[in-house]
Image (tube, rainbow, N blue to C red; front, side):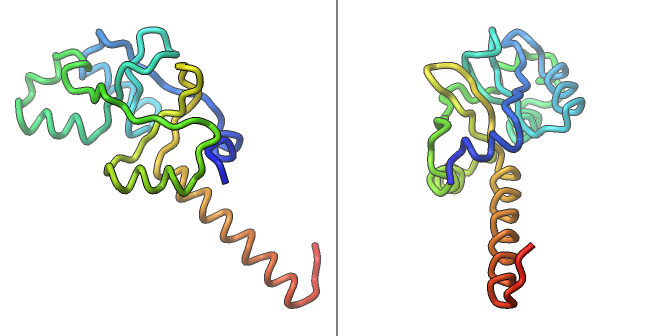
Length: 145
């Protein structure tokens, strides 16, 4: 399985925030879209950083409420690890586990194509296992839908 399989199901829509947006705006974007991370991008296509809920919590713990008026670039991860559409799902799972992050941008030719979350990966795996279970049950019982 490839990342393109997940994107085909979930879609390629990506929420971004401009580098000049402040953390309060970022919180509004996360809440509005019910997401846990957002890509920092000036043009919606180039990845300049990524900010997650964890980044916000860490910044609040370190600097207090003053962080809310800071630009997102003050708390964003700027050395972003990304994957391509044809990356193997198992490799992305390994990357997420090894580096302990939950969101990975999908980039092709320097342009943002999507974002895959750990939730997307888990959902895809559960659906895959359910399909396999159903197929095996049909094989055993001789029933085909």
